Amino acid sequence: MAPEKEEEIMRVKITGKCRVKPNKKLGRSECQLVTFDLPYIAFQYNQKLMVYKGDEYEDRVGKLKDGLGVVLEDFYQLAGKLAKDEDWVFRVEYDDDMEGVEVLEAKAEWIGVEDLTVEEGTSTLKELIPYNGILNSEGLHRPLLSVQLTKLKDGLAMGLAFNHAILDGTSTWHFMSSWAQICSGLPSISLLPFLDRTKVRNTKVKLQLSPPDQNGSSTDDAKPVYQPLRERVFKFSESGIDKIKSKINSNIPSGGSKPFSTFQSLAVHIWRHVTQARQLKPEDYTVFTVFADCRKRVDPPMPESYFGNLIQAIFTVTAAGLLSMNPPEFGASMIQKAIETHDAKAIEERNKQFESAPKVYQFKDAGVNCVAVGSSPRFPVYEVDFGWGKPETVRSGINNRFDGMVYLYQGKSGGRSIDVEISLEAGAMESLEKDKEFVLEVN
Image 1: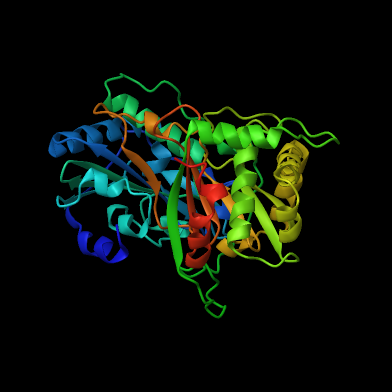
Image 2: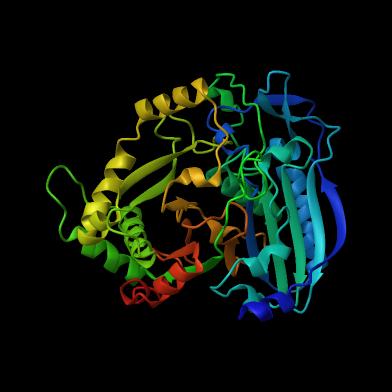
């Protein structure tokens, strides 16, 4: 779709609004946000869009609301709100008197499911997802989850905005899978959330906010000049992934490197080709950042069902010339080493550093000329079936996007296929699309 046509079709009308609470009384509970949560307090709500085929909009909405009331009995923190004490120690709290999750109903019946499966642009999708530009700190007076259910010509668009200060991607998809289980007829969810986040860290951190503005810059700073971004999904087939991985593993460097994983192989492929598309000088630095799950890295390890943020950013930096002129295994080795050395000791040091000088993170903190990877192809996004089939597409919204942000999702075709959603300045994106060594391996 061309940009001018995209703008023409998006005129979504909100037709209803309600709140959904846990079906049963739970009383009052509160849990402080921990060191792993606080870096994201000034990020924006984490947005996802899931698109399903089929009619029976009203029946589906009723089923989703009913199921939500049940699943919130276990995931009740999502029906609560943020709070802080006089020392600016943040917590998530729930009480039966709170209003719960926001559910919006909307219509856009001239939009078809196929219109939303295009590879280009997320700006076209923004009217289908709530809370564009809203900061997580606003969870002090907004719901921590907002859901928009939009009736399409031939399906349903489910737009979701999660407060990233209280959960990461693993917890997000645990919740979504559990909600789908209830809607599909299971009497209870298969895996209960582990809700006591203080078991992993119990340090009270005072984080006084000077909230950034909606562009992610401090209100005290002069507003930076932003280049227009383009977003695109590159769909890597199983054969494309295997080809990339096989090539990089054909010449593993000596000096302790192990065979490179699928993630490490694809990551360096993206990093090298994006760096080339940006036409950086050889001496320019470039940073690769990955938000890594720390559930099994901390000591003692936390269960997969830990509900909250248990991720940390891992950084790798080199000169653009070194990255481009060396074979891909050079960059892959750097990424592998950074990931493998981020053990319990490194996590502890990072936590202590943050606790001694708490910092409100902004987008620019991802690093210069960065490629920053969020989400994971391990998340079961295409397994979220509420009883009417798997989604036709899963996308991220416009929030938390900057030049070099990458989201990885499992491919809809299954197996080892991976969808790579990239945001880049328009000129770099055009160069990347023309890069045959990058695009030829994409089906």
